[in-house]
Amino acid sequence: MIFQAFFDCMNFTSWLLLGFVLLILNDVIRNRRPRNFPPGPWAVPLLGNVFTGVDYKTMHELAQKYGPVFSLRRGSERMVFVAGYKMVKEALVSQLDSFVDRPIVPLFHVTFKGIGIALSNGYLWKKQRKFANTHLRYFGEGQKSLEKYIEVECNFLCEAFKEEQGRPFNPHYIVTNAVGNIISSVVFGHRFEYTDPSFRKILELDNDAVVLAGSAQTQLYDAFPGLMKYLPGPHQTVLANYREIVAFLNREIEKHQEEWNPDDPRDFTDAYLSEMEKKKEDPRAGFNIETLLVSTLDLIEAGTETASTTLRWALVFMMNYPEIQEKVQAEIDRVVGQSRLPTLADRPNLPYTDAVIHETQRVGNIVPLGFPKMASKDSTLGGYFIPKGTAITTILSSVLFDKNEWETPDVFNPEHFLDSEGKFRRRDAFLPFSAGKRVCIGEPLAKMELFLFLVSLLQRFTLTPVPGEMPSLEGVMGFIYSPEEFRMLAVPR
Ligand code: HEM
Image (cartoon, rainbow, N blue to C red):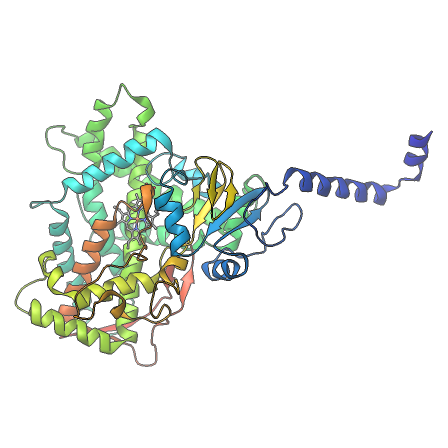
């Protein structure tokens, strides 16, 4: 009887309302905040905090309000954020085994498939990372050494700057091509001319993908991949760009397979093909063509946009702070002079220049949110409980600008890296490459590149802004924080 009366008084609107209330109730029950979970802003039912921008400045504000460990919800997924040197160090270094794994990021998973180096986990990750690390170290000495590759490329880069004959030009793709050539030499054994349209296209596709991957719409894809994959938007561009990049890498790998001579490994790809033979009995280690493809993508992607963006920030800072540029040039003139090219052996004798490069990395802040991670086991951080499997972001920008660590955090100040006698001094809170088990494997290579490229350029050119076009110190937020496009003048010295 009661049911009959209930059904009789329900019309279409009432059913709709009831359905909605049940949906919300289900969401509230299913997505209850776990006990003692890090605090965070109120989450809209069903959607979570999708309207809170995940850019580093918003993250700094949330850390001010909720403390160094806080959380957000995206759809039904909870994410923890860690801010400030002390807590980031606690998460990455003191609790070395707690936050090692990568979560599945749907937008990247389509291409990277959880294999390779940067977005894989467990046994496969350990084996692939170790192999890549050994290979990068093997290139430490001799004619095929990384330093030699960079020295050769420095000449090409300076020639390209010279060809501009002091006229205004945008250095973006010359610099990216130069940096990309180093990693291409390591991975594929050859470089590409700056005029090669095929490589230029790949660099542009990659740059666009990295910028778009940080946009709000692509973040919506990660919250609702099942729905978003049918809708148009920048996430479709990211996916299409990766398809083209993968096809390009595939062609390189196929050529290597045809020419492969196990007695004469020329590069990373040749060495990997040999490793595939050796590791046939260990399929869990994942040494196969599919993983090779993703590992080369990892190295090219992680090794190009990062170092190239840092170098472009260096150009921007040198133009904005001409007095600092003059001091660097004076030091280079004194130590290296004009009659020979700089080498890595000069680095200890160029403390001011080294400090400027470190400060460029600090203020350039190119990977503000690091790479995403996941709790590998139930953990406690800052007194809060973080269940296994929770996505966790260590906010590297909050370390690089930590008020408790830096004398003048918001000012470009090379003195941060100099002691009272003008000698270079290391700083604990200098973590642009992150820390712990997932620390960047390209750190030594990137440091060589930044030093040799910048010193070679400043030895030969004075970098000045085009009149009325001072490059902005405000960057563009994507997955990487990069300078706005700018033009400049490179005046031969
Ligand atoms: C200025 C240049 C660079 C910066 C600022 C940078 C920064 C980073 C950061 C923040 C991470 C994430 C670490 C973490 O998850 O905790 C990372 C990972 C990585 N980087 Fe770099 N990187 C740079 C250059 C390079 C270069 C030149 C290479 C190539 C050899 C490279 C290869 C990688 C790889 C493969 C990973 C993933 C490591 C893993 O997941 O185990 N990076 N990098």
